[in-house]
Image (cartoon, rainbow, N blue to C red; front, top):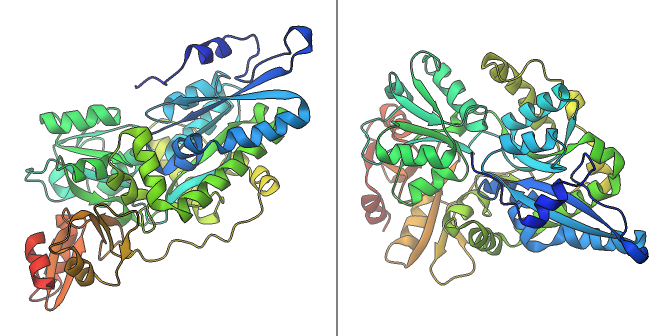
Length: 446
């Protein structure tokens, strides 16, 4: 497990007598007291950026707290702690050392369960990014792997992070394919970076992970998609959780966080390219990968609202985690608390995600172009100095890199698919359709 990035100042704050990450009384001579708010986030889980990486870089939370502190005579300080997955954030929250955290839907349920067990209850107060079909999770394999479908995973080793949303996708997908995830495959419980290395080394046959790992590996030519999580057609999302004690004691500070998250969401939606560049700079991820998920037509849709369909999906996740022995019963209705968001910000008029359009990002450009069809995209990309070309899967709508997609020529129409299995199914059902290489697709479009 990757350790959080904790400065010496943060370490001191965590050792203060209070059983909470908030610190401090006033200093000598009547100096304003300092209150430290600790936020756990996952910099590389990029559909949490409006509550983490992007929010931190924009400084909106600090701005909101500065205004509050001026009125109250308090100095507020934010300690940002970076983790690889949601599990250590939950551990820190239940120890009273992290006040606010962001993580995926499956880890959120574990967060709820552990909080109740350890008498440090937590509450889900907002959403960061979501995909209503489940496209944020993907199973990938090596570029030269003979594996082409989930059926090929029988008897193979698959790396995932047990208890994560990606693990949930893997379990559900295998069951739908008639494969017992406990008996028919060998699951390797590894953090994402370890799993990526295992895939490259050949010690894992496939990798099931959450954003941005599948897209990054595909973009860099280190993996190809085997299964698109959107085929499950079940919503997946990441959200913000808060310690109930903190929320009760400092509701205004929680309000400020949610206001800041709303501002960061507005920024991302208004300036998606700039936001992707900013997140890339902070995380070391390629900007093109960040944009695949967080762009104008990206796989993730950003909206803080606790949408009913997302909460319904969360309830459907409980049995999966129970079957794995990771939680007992979880009272989702008690865990979800919409009151702080309603109190902090007015309801936004964010639309639901519509059908994604092909999109082209040329080198040297600060904006992108969208197109009405894959053919239009390919015509524009042919011969151009392309930074990244994105195309939605013809079946699921999941955006993917055009040069990494599996292309099918069906008469005069060109269709793109994230996985070979999806393309094969389409070809089997359409006489005369055939799978072609990307270069041939560009040539046909031209």
